[in-house]
Amino acid sequence: MKKLDKHEQKIPLEVGVFLLLALCMGQNILLNGAVSPEAFVFTNIVALMGVTLGLLGSSIVIVSLNFIVVAVGIFILFFQPVIMMLPLKFFYCFSIPIYSFIAYEISKSLLMRKGLISGREDIARYLHNTDSTTGLRSEAAFYKKYKQYTESLKVRQTDDTRKLGLVMFQIDFFEQYMYQDKEATKKILEEMAETLVYTRYPEELFFHLDKGVFIVLTVLNKETNEKKVWYKMNKITKVQMNLIPYKGSDATHDITVKMGELIIQADEELTVEQALGRLSRRVEADLSAEYIA
Image (cartoon, rainbow, N blue to C red; front, side, top):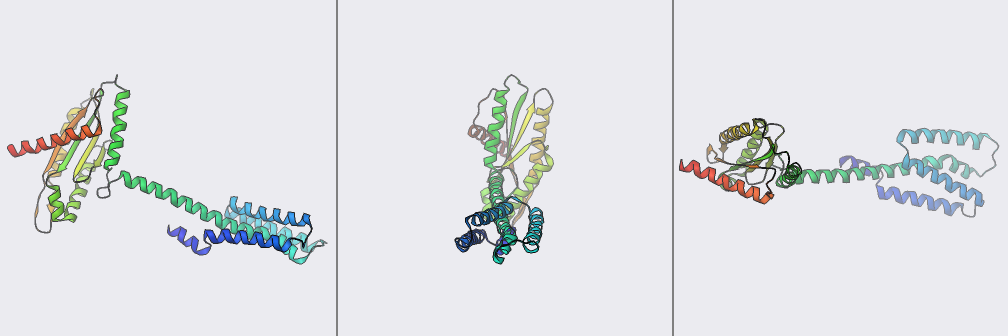
């Protein structure tokens, strides 16, 4: 954006287009009736060549060709016995460089604006699929990935060795923490995200569904020992998260993280809402079991 603003300070796009049109119109008004029809057509062809060179050429090509055009034009028109009006000689020598320079500035501004628009689309897509606080994938990204993975399981129903493992981690009393100290709560979320990244496997997908709810998506293989390892990793992750302290302005204490697990078979048809509902109920059951114990 700063690069575009710096360029626009030289020749704005609108000014460049207006200048190009005004130059063409002024040229035709001055030459109309003053030169022969053949010369009039030729001057417009020369102007078109300059515009085409500026729009399609690079800076090095434009400078090189303009230098050659000016040198050859001066040699032919001024050092050879060519009978022509002096202003017309200057026009033929310098029209292509002038038109190509203006057209090049217009082309560069258009390319910068196109790149800026494309960059904004990428940024918007990134922000839509990324949680701003934790840097993990967002709830919208979870919906997309869940649908993608479950459809992949349906396509390979004959391969009953692949399963989808979901584990949810939820901070208890999250709303109360946010009410007491938002900055301290955001710090908890950031540390929980770091715990997931450094504790879990790189091939797993991590999501933050807002309000202190984290989900880990894992593809499990029945033929290996992945399921047992997955349950063990979930417990380790929960223990690590419970060690994260809440450092509020008034008090400092440990947090309580609830956990719910769900394994989806290839032949199961669970919507994302149903899967989240089951995980939420198991999260509540996990906390109830701890309080009863």
